[in-house]
Length: 316
Image 1: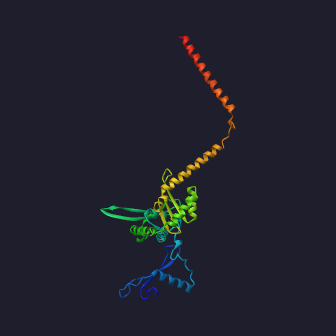
Image 2: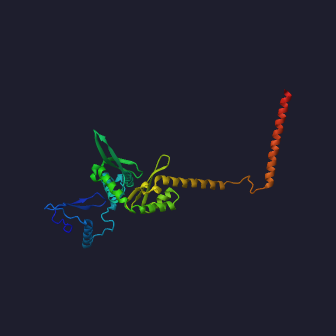
Image 3: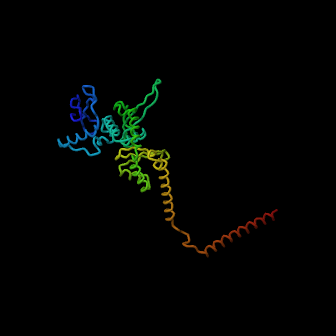
């Protein structure tokens, strides 16, 4: 606190347990006794330098570069059977806000569902007054709701509707930066080039720490796709990545692969049919005899028809 410029400031230290491990928070004031704002210039770099010194001085386990203050252990699937569901959901939602960028509610909801958390927007008008809020709840591993959902206010304003709108805008800005989505596009393109089925494609991306979430209608047609890059902390709909990665593109690709598979199976089945009664090779003599038999049959049919006609004439 002294090195950060807060040595003379009042402060409170409290223990927090919103993630899997307990940790400490320090809360202080940014304005000193004279009314001046304490400098926050290069605050992050200064604080990390101080933390490195403290780790070395007291023999603490150093944090991994690039992952400082990232409570990855907080990102666990919610398990309703373990109890304290609100605390689990609170930890997961806040961890997702810290570690991922989502440019829309749809992407935010898809991300939370991966951790067994449901999210629902509630907007409308009551007595002429507009309202907007968020509802969170627990999901089973199969994606079914379990327990009673609750308002975001039971967690905090930082996970409410208005806070999320600002979060979406920040994410949009970050994802529009040149090259921000190039690595993810490369992983997806590689999977499309090397895989011949949706299952194989999803498995290959999973090996690269990317989840592909396809949404299908009742007819089995793909109408939406979202990619979750856990390594980069990016959640992006296919349409955000480009037309080549849209739901329609994947529907056409997988449909074409299915048709090719069906044709291959049909050709394989036909090739395995026994050739009973079929000549093994072309024989001109057999062909001539077949034609002669056909001609004789037609002549016989014509003669029978003529006899019947003569009988009818005699009777008349």
